[in-house]
Length: 103
Image (cartoon, rainbow, N blue to C red; front, top):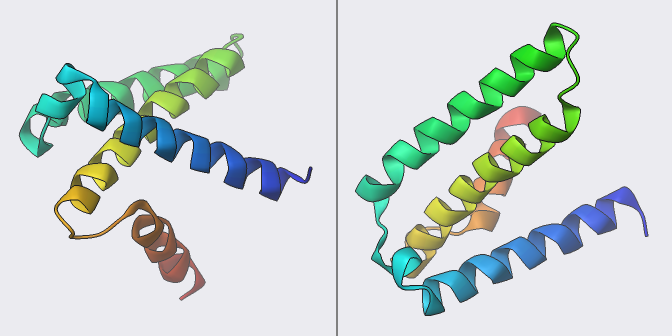
């Protein structure tokens, strides 16, 4: 499987996990844009901390990978909320940034 195919399959899996959490997990069902705000900030700060560790020569690549995943989950969560409100979906987020970069 190519890296592109593997990334697509992994993203589909993550989106499905998010849908299941919103459908079945009481904590996830209670969340909204306001309640998720501190988690988004926290995860961004944790990514920055791990970036610093790696940049200064400390072993932290696995931790950076994990923190990037936590940050990605926040993006997926926000996109899921927007999907439920029929505003936009994750594909719109991904295509939006791809279009911006190509311009």
